Length: 432
Ligand code: UGA
Image (tube, rainbow, N blue to C red; front, top):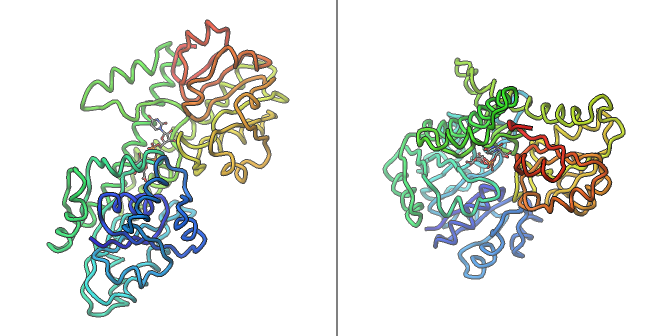
């Protein structure tokens, strides 16, 4: 099939390389000519394991192209996919201005039937709006719109797309359904065929539910701390029940990233404007932020009456999760300013995200290795569960530190093991 994808952000680019990898002819369009030049040169603007290999291979075999020219890219396309951003407005609702301008441009260039598919996460009802924006530009030309939300995770985006567990096809016509089935044919996946609004809603519901799981286990962790129980074991027991499932029961410092915080807020807004005020999701958000504050309290407690003023704190991990350099809504962006406002002198290290972090965290020092960050530090605070930190040589870490204090926001180590190495070790929801 011939596919045109508009927007080369996470969703657009990953979909583009994966659709070409399975045999479709894909042209990716973006208005940013520097980004397009970089992609043509085989370099990915996002850090994502495995992406550059696919980028180069599929450009070499001429199944993948990049351009700034939407009109040309649309010409032969059977399907045009919209994958541009929907940034949050100040009230949390999704800003649809990029979607609208792309839809209008698609309408303007429509010279034959196309199926226009939205992959961006958009509020319920946007598909219908896209239809009227296109219609206003193209008059009587035939086209269909469809919703095909994306469920990939950053850091494992290629794997998630190549092994997608399900695909939601929100369609309004037989033709649209057939085209989307053909698009997904090379993937061995379960297809859920539905209407536009249901497809759009399923994405918000799925993300809000995952966010709820995280906040739920974080609250369980907080009670565990009061009662000397171990949340990791509690989560294991819960997770063995297939009705609950073990994923997303990792207690810590709460979720971050470009999706959960934005989508939960947009979901709340969407409910409100539709006349139903969601009750659980706003609490999920509150618990999520509290979790950041609790970690700072733990760091403060470790120094007793002395507090954090003048203390040298090594922060390990800045990205919102491992295998990405994404700093959007990263817990580090909340936690580090709290530490510095209490007088701590922060030196941070992240294997990948430091360049991205500099503009968000201008008042701290960055180290080029974990050793440099921890040298003579009064305490270490772990904020991202990178493998590099899981594999730290604990004796070497202890030798580096001025005082052996580790505050672990990601439960990377066994408390008993840390104790036997002589650390003061505090984590989330486990016996100290
Ligand atoms: C999330 C969803 O997992 C994807 O299915 C969805 O497609 C994507 O949002 C999106 O809407 O585009 P992503 O934001 O890339 O993906 O990252 P996740 O792996 O879901 O992690 C989100 C946050 O939750 C991270 O900060 C992570 O550290 C945190 N988390 C995750 C926990 O605190 N505990 C857990 O048990 C799991």
